[in-house]
Amino acid sequence: MRRFLASAAVAGAALLALPAAAHAAETDPRTVPLPFLWPRADLTAVAPDGAGGVWIGGGQGAHCLVVLNPWCYNIGNPVVRRWTGSGWREYPIRGWTGNGFVRQVASGAGGTWIGGVEQGAAGTNRLFAFDGTSFRRVETPSAAIGVLSTGPAGTWITQDVPAGSGEPHLLRRDGDAWTAVGLPDPGARFNDVRASSAADVWAAGSRPGADGGERRPAVARFDGTAWTRLPEPDLPSSTAVDRVVPLAPDDVWVSANAHLAHWDGSAWTTIDGPGGPVVDIAVDGSGAVWAATVPSGGTGLARYEDGAWRQVAVPDGAELHDLAAVGASTIWGVGRANDAPIAVRTG
Image (cartoon, rainbow, N blue to C red):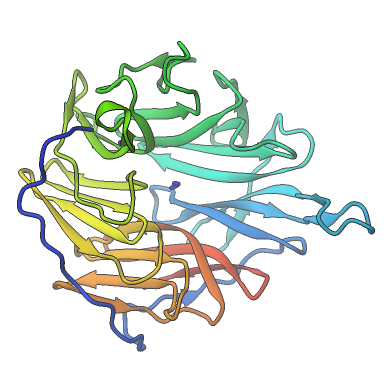
């Protein structure tokens, strides 16, 4: 995207997989030529457009404002582009004023949204919806948006508000308004919300620990009417789930720092990551899992299939921030390489 409960014991967890050396293969991605972007550009988000292409988002034109203070930067202007299959297309972002960048892109079920960060903001504080010709600004319930997700179960957001504040953490778009959605645990805080169908919504993040102790990883499923808390996945490297990718009620992947876990409808199976913190995950049409990682002796991209990880060749210096599965066999990734924006894709 991109970019979430329970305290039951995990059943059937198993540790699998070791990273392998990178080598060229038919599934390795290739670099996609980007449209003109101003210097010091960065791409932070990618999402399928539903027609075989993708949306990308980020920023461009960051520059120093005060020569004597190298830390004083103007973060530049927002970027959103659409790959149509033959080229890039730009659409206006109506209602955007001042500097900032696009932090999130969410697309699905015929709708596309972007989340923006204005200069000086701590996180996403602007939302825009695509109307077919441009992005129009949509009012937010607060200036502290966390998750932005859209798909077959509608559009969802979270607010970064403390438990007990009286402000809703999870909201869903209902017509032209945001409606609060009750949580499976009042203290739950979600890092990702995604749906495989209108009646299969998964949320992942963390919940309060027992007796006020350390927070614990949490996953819950919403069937359109009520939440079901799932057993806690065994994720040794984190106290919270970062990403969730539901393919079906009995086929769900989550990631948390250096580990992943898979839900088969009855139990979680824990899997060692490919090495280094996992930034994002995506699952292609064959069922293979792709993981973007912070490079640490590897390539920063790996593919998990048949019980093993394979490091995937990407351009030298590439650090991917976001992944997206497009169609049956294509994976896109965006980020930076050697102080320049980069987009890669398989197929």
